[in-house]
Structures are given as structure tokens and as C-alpha cells.
Length: 442
Ligand code: EPZ
Image (cartoon, rainbow, N blue to C red; front, top):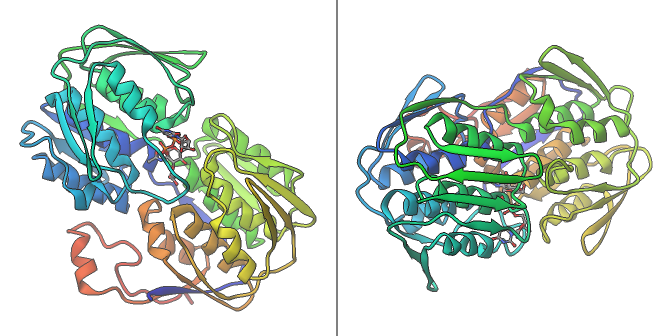
């Protein structure tokens, strides 16, 4: 099986420019089809989930092109309401086209979403909310069919502040008749950014402090240009790369206001953080200690997407730590792989007890999803010897040019040349690390 090799034990030093936010841009790409015109997304990350979304938009009849780092989508002509199985089933965010297609066409037919296997990941909250707006939805073994010529605004209280369900309801409500109120909506920064993107297109949306979102359906939207915020999960990952290797890594364009919980936790471990304007430096030269309890929670709590990279850090911290994963019931797969590298981790249900060791040892390990792949790369960078990671391609779903960036910071990473077939799939985008044979730096 294809793998990458990391020769670890080298501190990383340098600066990283942050990509645009994956989890902000994906719902916006679905939102582009609400308007029969052009939407531009500045700082759009060149990652696989965006490439898959582009293929999905083109399958629906949109024209999509790059203008430098800006992605433009012309949704003037939507020729179908059916999303191809082979594209829709590749990622979780394809489910967001349900609300957007209902809003634009009053019809939708799409496969069940794919995405990282972190547990059951049901879509009941999505479907409940859209049915409350008046959509008639049938679920069969293979697909979801929905109809709803004129959706009607209503009050929707979410049992859980689901990010995706909030986004789906938002996208469907923008063109519905009347007012929709979403109570107990998700408050992740990506929700606020989706609202801003829709407001820039002319949608009437208000976010109330207590987590309510009010949408007044509007008949007409307009061309727009949106400046994507930086990716807070990628920011955290690079800061952890500096810390876990005992180096110093500076992240530019830091989304500070979205990372308070993350910075609090990093400080608690004793990692030195130095803020300088819009940049933040993590210095791991003094080492770091364990955390009594790290709990993941909906925003503004600690983000579940950084739980696995944090598990890698805590595996080599001084002392013992406890992690409680409250969002996804199966987000500890990485523990088994870290144990192969010598980590001392005990799992009990949604809790992990980690007794830190000074150094992981290189081993052959396997990634099964995006953030687990990132956590294994961090582990390989910290470990003595060579770590071979299979399943590493998951990382391309969310991290732009990550292996190039890490090599520029001093990492010794070797990738196997990819087959031409895969290079062709990249379809004209500048080749991403992993679609070209690159050799280790130095
Ligand atoms: C989004 O997933 C993100 N993905 C995830 O990031 C992120 O981890 C998650 O939000 C939480 O912040 C994208 O934005 C593309 P949820 P989503 O609906 O929308 C349960 C990454 O690595 N639930 O808030 O799927 C669900 O099972 C990815 O970038 C229901 O029960 O998250 C889970 O336990 C991974 N019914 C919890 O809610 C539903 O209808 C949180 O799910 C929907 C969700």
C-alpha cells in the first residue's frame, strides 16, 4: 500500500501561511447554487474536498474556474437536481447540497454522504429541519429524494447544535417564504462565516447572541465575492507540529478570536506562545506537560477536530493526561496506531488516559481519516527513526500542500511518486504535495 516515510526527531523551525478554512468553504460551495450568477471565494484552499465539490458543482451544470487563489462559481444554469453517487458519497459536505438544491430548484436527489468515519454520523437533524420547512423527503437504501416547491419559514429547535444541520437549514431557508428561526444553532465560526457569505449575496440573516439565527426568505440574491477566514484547525495543527518537535513554528493570519479554547489548552501544557500582530509562534523547546482533563465540546469549547493531534502531543508530554471526546463516539482510532509507536494510552469508552513518554518510536502505522492522518504525521515528526504512514492521502482532504510546508520547516518526509492517473485527477490545479514525487529536504 502507498505510504509516506518520515524520519523524525528534528525540531521544526519557520513560518507557515494559513490556508482558507475547509469547513467554512464547503457549505459556501453548496450555497453558490442558490444564486443564478457568479460567486467568488478568495483564499479558497486547494484541497481534495474542494476538488470533489468542484466536480459536484460541474455535474449540476455550474461553470467553475480559478482566478489565482480565488475560486469562481457560475451557477446560472443548473441542469439537474441529481447528485452523482460516485461524487456525493465521497464527502460529508455533499449533504449540504440537499438544502441548497431544495432552495434553488425545489427538488433534490443525492446519495448518503461519505466523509470521515468517526461514528454513525446520522443526518436525522438535517432531515427533521428540512421537513419542518415543508420539504417532502423519502429515504431509500441508496439515496435521499426531496421535493418542496415553496418552502415555508418556521421555528426549528435543534436537539443538538449540529454544524451540518444548522448549515443545511440555513441554505434551504434563504429562499423560503417568510421567516425561519433556528434555535440551539451551532455557533462554530464556520456558521457565522456562512451567514456572512449569504448576507453578501443579499440574504436577510441575523445571529442573536444566545445562538438563535433568524432568516427572512428573500427572492433575489446577487453576485458576490467572499474573503475566506483562515483555517483554525490547520492553524492548531501547525502550532502542535512546532511544539511536539521541540521547535518554533510561527503561523501567520491566525484566526485568534476562533482559537481561544485551543490557545488556553496549549498554554496549560506549558508550550510557550508568542503573539506578534496577526501571527502566533509556538515554541516547544522547553517541553510540555500533560493536562488533567481535555474535553471536546461544541464551539466555543475545544474543537473535536484537534483532539487527535492533541493526543499525539500528550503522548509525549511530561505526566499523565485524560481526554474525553464528547462529539464523535468513534474518534479514538488513532490511539491504536500511536500505541504501535510506543504511546501509553488506555481507552475506556469516550475517555483516554495517556501516560506521556519522552519519545515515540518510528513504526509502520495506518491512517483511517483526515485528522487521524494529521496526528500520525505529527507523531512521525516527533518519533526517533522512520515512521511509515499508509492511508496518508486522507490528509489531502483538508490540508493544502502540507508535506511541502513541513519540509520547508525542516521535516524529512519522503513520498512515493503518485501514478499519472491520480495526477490527472488533480485537473489542472497546481500539483499538491502527494501528487508529485518530492524528496526530503536537505
Ligand atoms: C462538521 O461535521 C465538520 N465537518 C467536522 O469536521 C467537525 O468535526 C464537526 O462539524 C463538529 O465540529 C464539516 O464541516 C465538513 P455535526 P458535521 O453535525 O456537520 C451528531 C473535519 O475533520 N449528529 O456537528 O458532521 C453527530 O453524529 C470534520 O474537518 C446527529 O446526531 O458535525 C455527531 O455526534 C470531521 N444527527 C455530532 O452530532 C445529525 O443529523 C456533531 O455532528 C447530525 C449530527
